[in-house]
Structure formats: structure tokens, C-alpha cells
Image 1 (tube, rainbow, N blue to C red):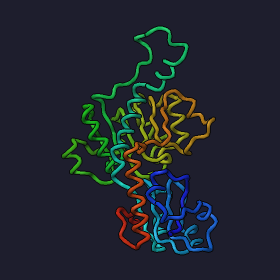
Image 2 (image 1 turned 90 degrees about the vertical axis):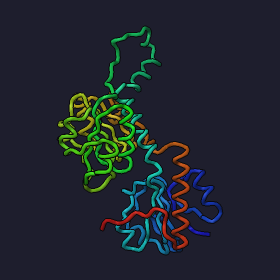
Image 3 (image 1 turned 120 degrees about the horizontal axis):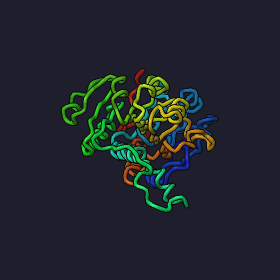
Image 4 (image 1 turned 60 degrees about the vertical axis):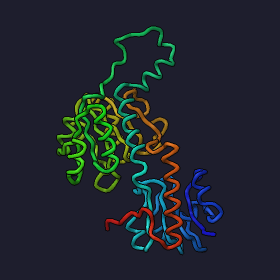
Amino acid sequence: MYRVIADGPLGQAVLDLMGNEIEVLPWSFAVEGSSDPVDAVYTYGHPQLNGEMLDRLTGVKVISNYGVGVDHINVPDAAARGVPVGNTPDILNGATADMGFALMLAAGRRIMEGVRYARSSEFTVYDPGYMLGREIHSTTLGIIGMGSIGEEVAKRARAFNMTVLYHNRNRKADAEASLGVRFVSSDELLADSDYVMLCVPLTDETRGLIGAVELTKMKSTAILINIARGPIVDTDALTAALRNGDIYAAGLDVTDPEPLPRDHPLLQLDNVTIAPHLGSATEQTRRQMAEISVENLFRGLRGEELLHEVMSSN
């Protein structure tokens, strides 16, 4: 039986796939270390894992992550110790893009405000002039990060007859040809977009990518959508921009911190829609994530090539 440290509680699909071949050890082993050998580490949520923690363990053959984002794992530290890191890319692109559009529709059409109003005692008569929102169709969408998820977002935007701008580290000629998207500078994207959607991974370069300066470059009628990672946006700056009317609204699947304290001012604003990190949260996608992450785990334990290995940039 393999000894595997995991943060949890793990989902039932993951436990079923691990079967009786895995002894799951609590995350305290990763924090405090273990004198007995540990075969692998499985990250289910987003626990921090670095070289110092790995040095307190012996025998680790693989780190398998349930999800695509690995900003919580120090991949260079793992690589320096000869430990491969596996993740679950591609399968969650569609579900995450769907979530981006759900937030765009909810924020633009003020759906959460409408739901609260419809359930309240204040709703006594239909008023055609009440709670007007912003249109989505035939507007301009700016996508920051034209990776796999960004491309899925662009595909959906075509059905809404949207003009799609994008900014990326590198131009994507294939995406431009197949999806009709246009590469622009970040400043042009912020200035011209009715909706700005963040689809970039969290790195040192993207942390704090959207702050007070960037928010002031956006239209006062623009809506910011974040389906990436919370720290990509300066939370205080976003709160101020929403309060002051510098931008119209925001739709957030992620926040910084996550979750927000219950008394956080962002939670008090009507013009922000916040979901509890549901980007890939469909039954089908989460099942596939379980299958791939556990397959990565077993392959690493057997010394085989992982289905999907994260390459260190260092």
C-alpha cells in the first residue's frame, strides 16, 4: 500500500479511484514532516507546498494536483528534488469558459440583484424602468490570456455576436484566423472593452495585474470578470472602483483572499457577483479531474511518465 499525503476531505470519486492501494495521510504530515517514508503528495484544494516541506519528507515520488492551476505548488523546488508534478489541463476549459459567461450575464443583467428583489416584499408591481442592466450581445469582449480557456471563451463570444479583443504574451495567429479575435495592447483592450475577462494563470508577472491604474483605464460602463485566480486583481482597488462607479460591475469566481471575510466591504456591494470558485464545478468535469489526477498519481508511484506533467520554468 502506498502512503500518500493529501489535503482534504477528498471527494468520493477520488477515494474510489484510489481504492485500497492508497493510505491517505493527513496534511499535517506535509506541514510537520514525517520520519517514515511517504510515497506521494496529492493536492486537492490549494495548500501551499514548497521545497522546505518536501525536505521534511523522504521517498516522495510524485506530486499530483487535482486541477490545472499549480500556483500553490513550488514547481521549481519539486523539480530540483526530482519530483514530477502532475495536473489536469484541458478537460476543464469548457466548464470554466461557461462559468465566465454565466458571470458576464449575471453581472451585466444584474441577475443576483433581481433574484433578491423578486424574493423581497418590495416587489409588488412590475416596473419596466427598474433595474436596467448592460447588454452582452454585440458588445466588445476583451480577453486577457488567450490560452485554452481564453479560446473557449472566444468561441462562445461568437454566438453572442461580440467583437473579441485579446492580449497575450504572444500573438496567437491560429486563434486570430479561426476565431476572428484581434490582438491589441493591454491599454487598448482595457479602454475599448465592454467586458474584460481574465483567463491568465497566477504567476509573479500576473499577480496584481489589475490594480487601480488598470481599472481607471476601463470604461465606466465596463464589467470585469475574473475566472482565473484572485490575486491577479487588487481587491482593495476593485472595491474602490466599484464603490466609486469607476467601472459598472464585476463578476468574480475567485477572490483574494479566498474566501473573503464575512465583513469584507466587497460583499456588501450590489454591483459585484461572487461565486465560490465554481469554474470547473460540474459533475462531468470533476469526475474527469479525479480520473486524471489519480492516474497521474499512480503513474508517478510506478515511475512512469505522467499523463500531464507541469514543466518547471526555472
